[in-house]
Length: 85
Image 1 (cartoon, rainbow, N blue to C red):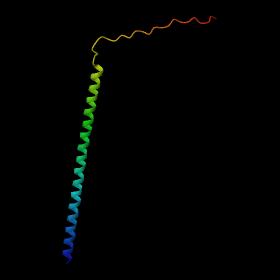
Image 2: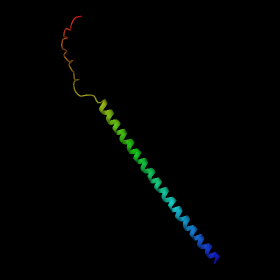
Image 3: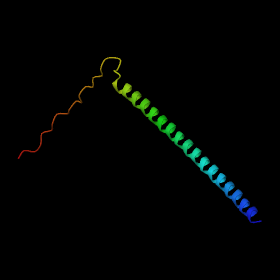
Image 4: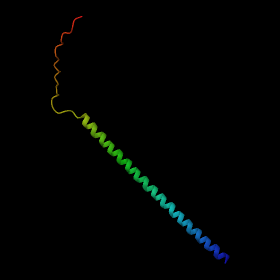
């Protein structure tokens, strides 16, 4: 009878250990998946940022097509004579 109880106890302990190990493995798999997702998200953000910087640099460095625009200076009105001192 005593050996039957110890065998049942040992079976329960082994089952518990298997369950704990399965939970640990599941948690590790979720962590690995989360890290992969974060790496892809960071890579996508960096790629989009580089594309935007390249587009902005292209627009800024692009030369205008055509003659330069000349803006005539504003005509000034003659100064009014002020009161003499």
